[in-house]
Length: 111
Image: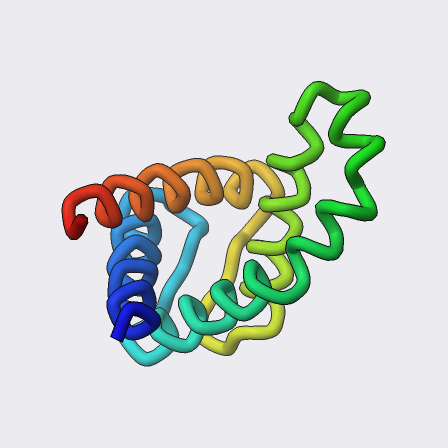
């Protein structure tokens, strides 16, 4: 049940981010659900491995590379998900920040 709630929250956060950020496109609700699922899978399985590998770079950049890694993984999710696209790197940066803040806020509201 917790996974379903997380999927709903991330779907709503994606739709809000798509509404607020031009160039961050989610075509419909089905695309938003699939994108939220793909982002969840990437964050669960791939992101921890990449964070361990990138730990020295993250340490040298005082944590900024962790943001870059998050942006690249979001961009990868947009690349493999039909109906979800991000126009450019700056859009991915702003979208990643807004998506993270929106998701955190929605998680805070539901707890």
